Image (cartoon, rainbow, N blue to C red):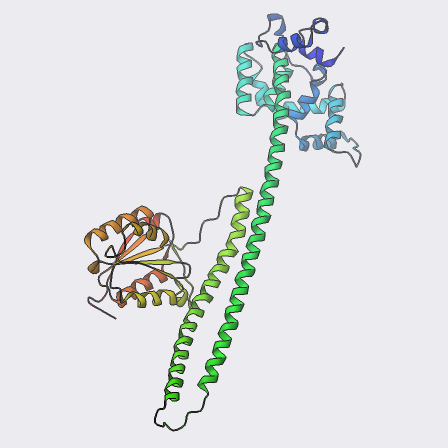
Length: 437
């Protein structure tokens, strides 16, 4: 007689006569049994119905448990045996009374003693409620062992539990295949990101080398011009004045290029630091690990290394709202010398105030001279900074000295985003009133 027919019917004779569809329907009926089914005691594992041992071994014992049983039983497993072979060996041993089946039964009773204790008493409905709760929680191994071995559990209930465990194995197999597919897709995406990162690094290195070569060429040209011997001043001629003008232009150009070189080198170093952090962070996100918190000092401020004052604004954007237009070029030059980006808005005199929100969102810090901007613009700026959690520094004057002092404060203590930054959105920085540096 087919072993599955034995599992699905109330008795072997009835099951053999019952069509397959009716037998399956009978197994899915409400799991309440008659009083004659409720006998005390528990089955041994070799006393379970044929066909159930595979589900018990596969559900209730892990591969580590099976390897421990191999050592206890002094069993010899072929060197080329895989996990399925080991599983099949214990399924066969569990169906017969032997030393190995006794070890299996003792190991299961010891592992799931609390669940066995819960099934020693109670009505069939109460026992079924325990099984439904285990299925809902996803912790079915111990409850399944207790249910299958408890003689007081009606046979239809054991059949129903066997069917649910059987279908659950199919669902878990599909879920595992989906997880493998998703992992492979993530690995491919990670490889593509790593390739693009390497290309970006190579382009950045090539740009730096090209820039350095151009600088060396300009320095050689300037040195050649500077070593031209100058005789006793003679009455300036047209050619002499042109030469002096050319020298002045080259010197000015050299000074500008020298400042730009410092800025670009500082930005390159900042970009290298950022690139070195991208790959570990991407790997943590792909592997599901939580990101590492940013380093912070006891006051909640990131430390700035000594000797890096000229690079204290690398990777930061400073927004200046209001002030005098003729002073802004000097402010811009000062920010760029420190490696930062200078953003400007006149407070609504000629520029539209609608642009102010976008500039605030791009900036790291916002500076505003309260004496050279309208009251409405200042209020609007405070609201925008609070909305975007940006630090707002209000200057007493529109001069260069107050601006430089504020930048020094920014460079020496870089605020870290979070509760500390949100609690210090506005700061008043004193400047010499009326300084027009």
